[in-house]
Every structure is written in structure tokens, then in C-alpha cells.
Amino acid sequence: MPSLVGWLDQSEEQQRKMREVIALFGEKNTVDDIGIGVVRDAFSDLLFPGLSTVQTRVRYFLFVPWVYQRLEAERVPSGKADQVARQWEIELIRSLKNGGAEAGVIGINAGDRLKQLPSFIYWNGLRTHGIRLFNGTRADYHRSMSRINESNRALRNVELHFDNPVLEPRWHANLPWAPEDLWSQSTLDLTEAEAEYLQERFIASAPDSLLAHLARKPAPIDDKLPMPWNSVTVDELSPALATNLAIARYFSEAIHGAPLLYNLMLAEKSAERGLAHGDLVDRYHNELERWQDLVGGVGGGHGISRTDFWATVTQTGANVTWPAKQFIDGWLDLVRDGVAVETSDAAWQLIDRRERTLKKGLSRLGNSRALENWGGASGAGQLTFRWAEGRSAINDLAAGLGVDADA
Image (tube, rainbow, N blue to C red; front, top):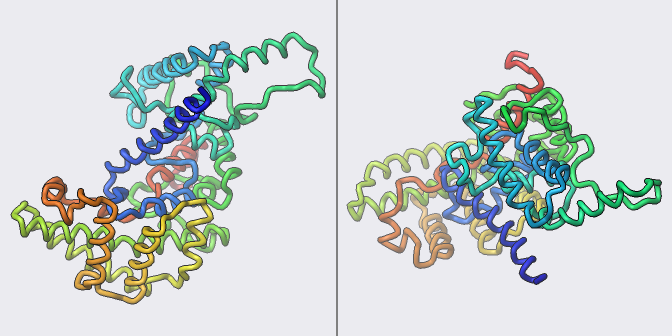
């Protein structure tokens, strides 16, 4: 049985990661046909820790703890904890609808059929920001409920002294109380107290992140700002954040040519085979030309050493495989040397070899049937490192704190 339990826990974690990967396929800048996702995620974790592309609004960082605190308050036994927690998370959908919320409500269309519950989506982020103190999966939490209920019952029957054993806290001590209308008519908008709490958590948990920097003085951020580095000036950043942001920008800009070239290669192969993608050849020619001007204008490297680059990536614990490192190093070498990748045999071979290594028989560059399923763009957008989610989080904080755009 212990091995089965361990497998279930690992399965839940793997499911969470897989669902995040699936969600990424809906975003043009995150599809990972050339295998750079580990490095992309490392920079995302440095800049916007605890956030993910499948999250919506930050009040879910409070909704989920409130669901689990209710489990304990109502002494739900282990055997029913999973079912009851799910029931209350579905109930939350109805409450948010009653409160007039629409955009950002997880499960608003699926309703009772919802599979990817908010607790599933926010569980890791809650731990990252020190809101969840319990160190385990949701399944672990559910299994522990009967033990917790027994311990609580025992504690109520004894006189508490400093030397009495007490339960290890499961949630941050300053977590705001759940509002009275949580289960009847709720909203996604933070109250001032809730915004202040999340502001403190974002800052305390990762003080050198861009999320923390923006949270210190949250102000509404225009959705038209395309990149995270557009939202700040270097002089106002801590040295650690300035370095991380500069290296993240370097990677975003330098690696952007690789998926563009990959898409150009696919467009040309499609056109040769009459797959009606001829107009895309000109599009990717033009985009590569603009990209080449961009990286040429900053010297192809922002003055960043490869040693510093990889040290920044690995500080997050990212496990970059040797083939991925070879590919990224090879591409960054081409950028550094100012190679015109569109006409470079070395660049084309690098992309071809990487995609075939990753996809083997399903490679679009080597499999006609796979090429037929190409939709005309595959990961062609520039990496933004969860900027959309970070921007949304700061906008929610600013609204909760009553900060106007002109403030």
C-alpha cells in the first residue's frame, strides 16, 4: 500500500504539470517544439514565482485555503475529504456567478463537470508564497483529516500548557478570514485587507522577484505593455532582480529567432508540397528580418557571459538536459557571432536536428503527415515568462488597495 500511495501522490503532481503543459499549447509564445521549456520556466520562476499560465485571478490564493479550513472546521473525515472539498469548490463557481463574476471564474462553463479544480491549480503557488504551510499534496491533506480531527478532539479535552504538543499549523497565521458571503454571492475582487495580505506574501516569499518589486507599489499596468521589462526602469531594481531581468530579456530576444526559423522551415516545406501555406513564407521572412535587426542592435548578447547565463538558470533548480544545453548554446553562439540565420546552413541544421531528436518519427520536418497538421504557427511568439499572469496579479492588488491608474 505505501508504494501505491506514493504513486498516487506523484500522479497528482504529474497531472498538474501535464495540465499546465496542455494549457500552454493555447498560447503562441509557449508551445515548445524546440525543447527550451525548462529554461523558459526557470526564468518564469525567477520573475513571477508561484504563478502559472493556468491561473486566473489572485483571490483564488485565498479561496483555496478557505475551502480547506472549512474541511477542518466541519471535521470532515479523510474518506470524504476529497468529495466534500470538490463539492465546495463547485459551490464556489455558483457563488461567483451569483456575485456577477464571469471572466476569470475557473469552471464557469464546465460547472459540475470541472476536472481542473482551483485547489489543483493553485496548490504549488500557495506553498511558494508561504500561504500553505502543510508540506504535501492535496491527497496527503485529505488523508490526514481523520488524524487532525482526532488531535483537535484530544486538544479540546486537555488543559493547554507551553509543553503540550500542538498541531503543526497548516496555513499562514495571518490568512484573512473567509467572508460571510463566500458560499452565496462572492466576487473575484480583493478587499483592502486581502490585497494587503497577498502583497505582503508576494514580497516576503520572493523579495528579489519582479512580482515582489511590482507588488511593493502596485499600480494598474496597461495590457498593451508587451514585455515585463517594459514595466520598470533598471535604476529602481535591486541588483539581483536587475541581473535576472537582464538575462531573462537576453534569452527571450536571442532565442526568439529559433522558433521563427523553425516556422519558416515548416512554411517552405508546406509550400513545396502544396499545403496552402505559401503566404507564411513571406511572413516568417519578414519576422526573421525584424528579429535579426533587434538582436544586431543589442550586440547579440547584452554583454552577458554564458557562465552567468547558466548560473542564473540553474539557481532555480532547473534540470536542463545536455542536449537542450547544447542546442541553446549553439543558437546563442550564432546570435553572438551575428550569423544571418535565415541563410545559414548551420542554423537550419541545428533546428532540424533538435526537432528530430525531440519528436523522432513525429517530426514535422521529417514526417509529411505531421507537417499536414501544422496550423501555420508553432511557438512563434516571443517568450514573456508569465507576464500576463503577473500583470493580472498586480492589477488585482492595485484594485484591492484602491490605487488608480493616475496615482
